[in-house]
Image 1 (spheres, one colour):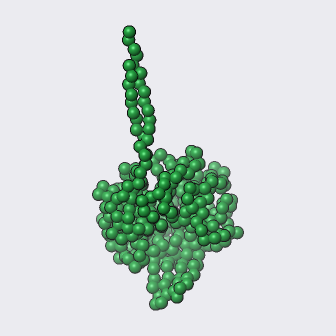
Image 2 (cartoon, helix red, strand yellow):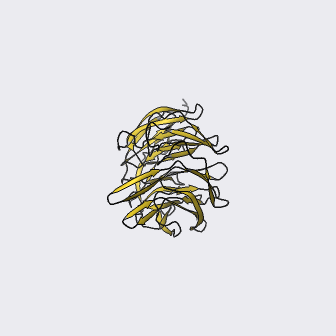
Image 3 (cartoon, rainbow, N blue to C red):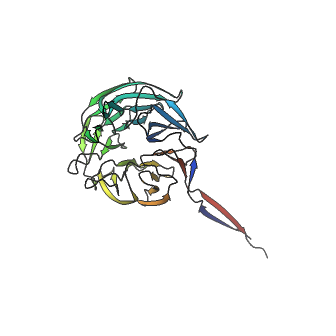
Length: 361
């Protein structure tokens, strides 16, 4: 008697893991910019009197220093990868003023990854730090909001701005554009699928407009429907379907981080509630994974993943190190670099589907 062969295929997943990698010689904080060759550029040392940048090489899993003598004492600047692969570092800076200090500046520099050097990028029109910068569809950079922090003697003041400007990499010049409807000290902004810019959070009070949309063609703003939860220092992440995930930040009734999340639905132009993250977070970061999910880390000692299909947040457990104000970057091997806020560095290795084949006769 003959028996037909039966083939069984079982699909399982290797468990996700956090693994240590070579640490930084000194601590850096966000932002981090992934370069076209897969390396990751860090431009803000945790200690503001440093004038250097660091580059992580995923092939050697190590960091090297690069001097940035033009930008000065880095803090609160933005870093935007341009269409030609160079990186615009704009604004920010620490200025000692005798017994006082000021955070905010106008210096712009251009990092060239082909030579690993910084070059003069001109100046911004307004002093700012903690602002938002978005690469527009035509290659220019929209820069909005932010604040100037002045302190000394145990106290400090934060002065937010409603100003906005457009930087042109072709001429290394920036010009003022129409100011936002409201000053936003710590905004978050993303480019929408139609080429406009969604700006959320950072308003002085919960009664101010929580979001607005900038049209680079007309250089005008539209007040968006209110967010579900007014918030400051939040994070906006563009999803593959065109929607925008808004996570965490600070509420207006306390200085505690919040866990609430919501979606800006681009087809309706409205915000919808999306539950809560597994952990309250502020000054966190996120990166889009190849499978369309969003890896979220920093601002707490844990990490999690958001699934746009189920709208669920899944806890990944404790990271190896605490990365307050740290940075996250997707590496060429699809792992995630988690660095900054400390000298210690780690990678998240996503689960990999494994096929097990069993033949029976």
